[in-house]
Length: 190
Image (cartoon, rainbow, N blue to C red):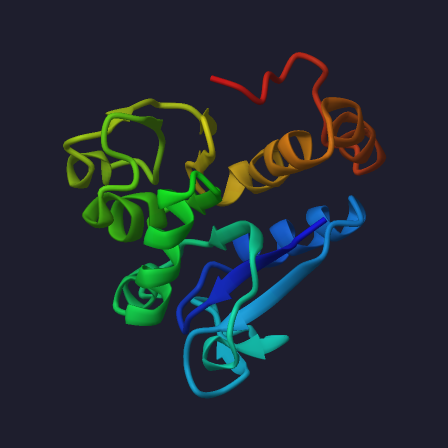
C-alpha cells in the first residue's frame, strides 16, 4: 500500500493532526507527517510543537491520501504553500484520495476547485467560502475520493472514514471499538 501524507503548517489544529496520525497508524497505514516549511519543527494553534517526519522540499511519493488538518492560521499557511497546492491539484486530477478537516476544506480545497459540485462539510460558519460545493451540517462527509470533516470533535470519525475506504469497514469498526469511540450507528458515508 502507498504511504499517506499529513501536512503540517504553523498554527495547525493539534487534535485534528495528531488524532488522525494515531488512528491511521493503528490501522497499520503508512502515515508520514510533512512540514510545509523549511523546519521539521511545527507549532500548532495551541502551542504544541511537533517534529514532522519530513519536509515538503524532500518530495512526496505516490500517495494513498493527502491529508490537511485545520486550525488557524494553519489552514491559511497550507493554502499559501505552492508545492502543496500543486500536489493537491495533481492528486485530485487522478482522483486520488484527499482529506481535509475544519477550516481546510474552505480555505485550501474550495479555492482550488477540488470540492466544486461535491458534498462536503467544514468548520461551521465557513460554508460561504465554499460557494460551488454542496455543504452539509455533518461531522464527516465522503464524496468519491474526497473526505471532509467539520472540526476537532469529528477527528476520530474523519480518520476512521479514511481507514474504512483504504482498508475496510470492519477494520475501521474494530479500531473505533478499541478506542471506545465507535458508535455502531455511525455511517461513514454521506
